[in-house]
Length: 281
Ligand SMILES: C[S@@+](CC[C@H](N)C(=O)[O-])C[C@H]1O[C@@H](n2cnc3c(N)ncnc32)[C@H](O)[C@@H]1O
Image 1: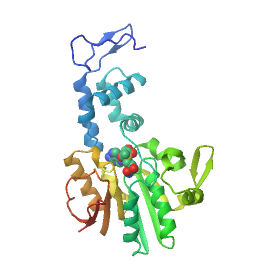
Image 2: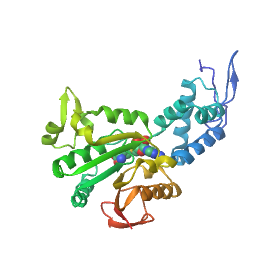
Image 3: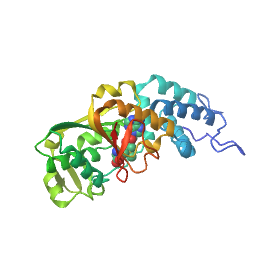
Image 4: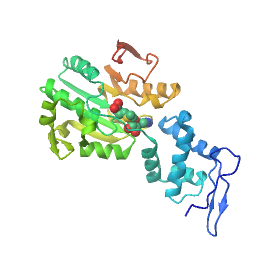
């Protein structure tokens, strides 16, 4: 269908000459792609400046697979069609994660949480669920007598679906100790399924951390936000930190990934710098 699309000779890699067949004209202009990426950045914080070429190629492939001829139409569909927006965000987000990632930080969290009887934990973002289940397993093991809930949010709907199913391949669970693997998972061939009762304490939600309704999630004692802020620029990191500040209770803690911030977040003090733990002040 698109075989007659040609690159303009001597032009920048992503400028395509509009070429018509009897029924369609195709025109993918880089500046229009950048306008769409800017909209995505404003709404979701995702900053693609460092991966511009590959991201625009993804947009183009996405547009073609939806029979969209140009980025202006793609932008219009992004603004007006929720399913197109969701699919596009699914395509552009990176969901890499695994069980028991940054486990020393989770151990430190248990030490902090053991002083409370009831508490709530937010994982923002949870991607495909491994972080949430790792926290749930450690809580069951070490603070089983407490009352708590864990909420996992993400903007990638496919990742959330996978989280809810709780089915993982061996690569994902390679750091889970054997005894815990046997206790909390059911293995069939090379698929490990999280045992259902772990789900009792977990809530999943499709949610953007920048959205106005973020605060409707409630108030949390502990907030894990690992390996998402790295995709945002400093201005957006600060915007999200503001959202995190508001959603945390007055004595709340924030747990970040080691590459997420290069400054102490406003409204927080350092609790453990090496483990990237901050306390709300
Ligand atoms: C690399 S994963 C991190 C998963 C997990 N926290 C970890 O550290 O292993 C990054 C996740 O951030 C999510 N994300 C990016 N921007 C977001 C936003 N504005 N709101 C909510 N989630 C977002 C992506 O969809 C992706 O699943």
